[in-house]
Structure formats: C-alpha cells, structure tokens
Amino acid sequence: MRQLTRIITTFLIAALFTVAVSAPAFAAEKKRFKLAWSIYVGWMPWGWASDQGIVKKWADKYNIEIEVVQFNDYIESINQYTVGAFDAVTATNMDTLAIPSAGGVDTTALIVGDFSNGNDAIILKNKTSLADIKGQPVNLVELSVSHYLLVRGLETIGLNERDVQVINTSDADMVAAYSTSDVTALVTWNPLVAEILAIPGANKVFDSSDIPGEIIDLTVVNSKTLTDNPAFGKALAGAWYETMQIMSSDSAAGKAARAAMGEASGTDLQGYENQLDATKMFFAAKDGVALATSSELPKTMDMVRGFLFEHGLLGDGAATADVVGIAFPDGQILGDKANVKFRFDTKYMQLAAEQKL
Amino acid sequence: MRRIINRKPDRHLSLFLALLPFMLLLVAYVVSSEIRLAENPGDKLLPGLEKFSAAIDRLAFQADKRTGNYLLWSDTLASLRRLAGGVLASTVIGALCGVSIGLIPLVRAGLSPLVAVVSMTPPLAILPILFIVFGLGELSKVVLIIIGIAPFLIRDVALRVQELPSEQLIKAQTLGANSWQLALRVVLPQIWPRLIDSVRLSLGPAWLFLIAAEAVASQSGLGYRIFLLRRYLAMDSILPYVAWITLMAYLFDYALRRMQIKLFPWFANERGH
Image (spheres, rainbow over the protein chains, first blue to last red):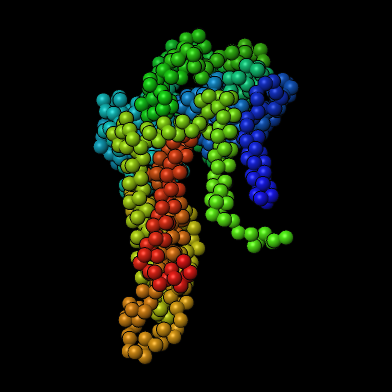
C-alpha cells in the first residue's frame, strides 16, 4: 500500500507541476516584451530593424527590453500570441479579429503598416476571365485572406461560394499543386503569386488591388499590456517609423535595407521591390492614421466580420456577427459594446507622425 | 520483504492503476483550464468541458450551415474510405509480395533489396512527387498510405515465411506438393494470423499518413478538419476529433485481435491466450 501511496504522490506532484507551468503570468508593469513576426513583404522591416539594432535602440530609450522572434509559420505566431506567449504579433485585420479577438484576447492595432494592393490574387489556368471560375475546383488556404478574396471576387460577378468547389491546400504545396492537372484555379499570395504567374498559361483574373484597403497588415499588441506599459507601444512605433523612413528613401542606405529585406524573404532587391509595388505601404505614420480613421475602415471590418461569421469563426456561441466588439479611433463601436476585443488606436502612430517619440 | 517484481496487483488494484493516469490527466486538464479561463473567459487553448459537449453537438448532430453535412460523420466517412482503401491494398500487396519473397529465392534475390530501400524512404519527403504523379485527388492520399505501410508489411510477411520450419516444406515436397500447392496449403494458412498482427502494428502509421495527406489538399476528412480548425485555435473541436480518431484506432485494433482469435484459434493457443 505504501508503494501505491508513493506512486499517487508522484503523480500528483507531476500534475501540479503541469498546472503551475501552464498558468499564465499575470500582466502588470514589466520590462521585457516579446514581438513575433513572420515573413511577408509588409513585415520584413521588423526583422531588419531587429538585426540593425533599431529595435534595441528604441527599447533602450524607454528603458525596456524587446525580443523580436521570427516565426516560419504565420498562423502559429498568432496562436502563440493568443495563448499569451507573446505581447505583440504581426497579423492581418481579418486574422486578428478571428483568432485573438474572437478568442477573448483584447487586442489593439498599434501600427497600420500597409494594405495588400495586388499581393493576393486569383489565378486561373488557361482561362482569362474571373467568370470562367464558375463550377471549377479552387485550391486555396481555407479561411485565410485568400478565401476572403475569393468570396469578394465572386461577389463582383454575382456568384457566391457555392458556385465553386473550395479545396483546402497548404501554401507550402501551392506551386507544386499548380503543376498538376487537377488544379485549374487557385488563390494565393506573394511571393507564390509571382512564381505561379511565371508559368505559361497562368492568368491573374482578380487581385487585392480590386478591393483596396480591405486586407490590412497590422502590428497588434495585447491591449492590457499596452495600457499598463505605454513605453512598449512607444518603442515599437519609434523603431517601426525610423525603419520606414530608411527603407523608403532612395539613398544607398534605403536600397541596402530593401535588398536585405528581400534576401531575408528569399528573393532579391528586384523581387522585393516588385512585391512592394503590389503593397500600399504606409511609410509615413500619418498615412496609417488616415486609414485607421477613414470612414471606409468600419465598412471593411463589417465585411470581414460577416465573412468570419458565415464561416463560423467568431465562436459557436455567436448568434450574430455582433458578438465581438470592434472599436475605432473616433469612439465608434461595431458590434457588442460590452465585449470590445479589437481596437484601432492611432495614439502611437499619431505620436510618431508628430515626432514626439 | 517481498521483491517488487513479485507483487502482483489484484483485479481492483489493476483497474485502479489503469484508470489512475487517465484520471490524473483529466484533473490536470480541468485545473489548468480553470486557471486560464479565470484569466480570460474566452480562452481557446484549454476550453472547459462544457465547450466540448457543445462542439460535439454542433459537429456531430447539427447540419453544417454552409454545406448541410453533419461534419463529424462526413469527415469520418471520407477518412475511413481512404484508410480502408490504403490498408486493404497494402495488405493484399503485403501478402502477395511477402509470400513470394519469403518462399521463392529467385524472387527474393530480385525484389528484397528494392523493398528494403523503398521501406527506408520517408514517404512524407516524396509528397510533392506523389502529387505530380497521382494528382491531388483521392488516389494520391491512398497511395501515400500504401507507400507508407506496404513495404513494412511485405518485409514482415517475408520474414515470417522464412521463419516457418523448413521441415514442413520438405515434408510437403516429399508428399508430392508443387510450389503452388506449398504456397497455398502450407505457407498461406500459417501467414494469415501473422499478417493480422502486422496490419495491427501498421494501423498507427496508416493514420499518420492519412492525416498528413489530408492536411495538404482536401475538402473533407478528419485530418482536413483538424488542420483547418488549427488555423483558429479551435481546441474545443480539435480535441474531440483527436479523441474520436484515437477511439476508432483502438476499436480497429481490438476488432482485428478478436478476428484473429476467432478465425485462427490455434494461433492464439500457441501464443498462450
């Protein structure tokens, strides 16, 4: 019997240990912060700013530490942020609403970095008009911005998702998938778009420049962490806009920065500049503020949440798309006012625009 | 003092010891979940148990809003078709090639090295080649399972055939049996129960390959759903799917074992069951 007691005790200790490890740390004023980012044209500046010591410079200025971690898997980075392992992450407006915000993590869009202006595209094989997509199987990463782009594209020609067959396909296998005869239509993002369009017979029939300002790339921060630690927000905004200034310049330093970012994303200066052409970067903080305060943004978010709701991504308890509240800089709230989990805040971008950081 | 290796648990203690780890896992889960939910009631990583029942109800007993399918059942059906296709084809290939390789030295000399090499090739590494050759449809998923488990079955059957006492083959030959009769009357009857053993062992890898194939490109299936939901950290749906897969895999294993005992009682006796 003693043996048994001992076994039980060991198990209990192990169980308690598991619990202790998995309990999240309580947020309050702190000194060390973590930002997760993944490879995408509009987020490459974070990697470069970190390599160049720009992030450290700004963190030192506000007397904090910021660790910048690159993820190979975009969704995993958002998931890690959502479970509390990171204080900030790079994400699109749609994924922010669907993952952290719908998951109850109050999240603030600190920096509106850019919107996709051609980086996401619908591609048909040997067909040249979007209307030809009707009845075809369409390969894409389901529930991603590609899926949203497809639905928006179909709307423009009076079709809906039922008129095509969506086949979930991993982005890692998209180019290989295109070369098989089963695949006749797909939706994906750059640099895959560029790679597939280089194959003869591939035609771009619709892209995100047809729905400008709807697929927005953000750097988002946990709202509670940001409220408790404004220094974190200031340091991030400071580092970001200093980087923007360098990379947007025509100088040798600007060119070197773009070349380094291109290389880090697996292409070169030319390839990266081509991707930048399909991206509306907000190099100046005031442009980011302008998008965040525009009257178009609530309309965009309304369409995005409608898409997410229809696909069941706002949670099972969601009776309507109103379940998650989205707050805009002018105080307007879309959805449940008592459950605001996604906030567009221009405070830090404004400080950067006014050079007050 | 009695040595611990001589202390045998009685029925009650056995049952208790068997259930204990499961209970502890459950307790650890519930406590961790409570802690996280106290922090954030919308936490998706470790949802409360009531979330699971809601998710199961939604997935298994309510028609999906968009497609009108009962997701759990349509996914299960799609996956089981692929799994059954892959495992059955592999079993047939395993029996045919395994017996030929084990029994006929000429075939062994020709095929054995090839099978050994193929069985060492990681199937997931040649995934892109499979897609280009077999397309993105159902065929490539079944083929992935076959490439994953057939070489193992072939090698195992071949070894089992070679293990048969050579006296048996000699005796049958002295009684006038030809090679065909040897294969049919001496080797195969003794191989069937052993084949069931190897199929049981390869069911785990078969599920692995099935789910990997469904993660790459598909419209339905258990693996497809899990990878899709993973995008949104919907653990309340993922964990019941995982439990369902585990339960089915366990039941298949159990069914195969019962079948073995039922169909080949002599084999079970030999083994001491």
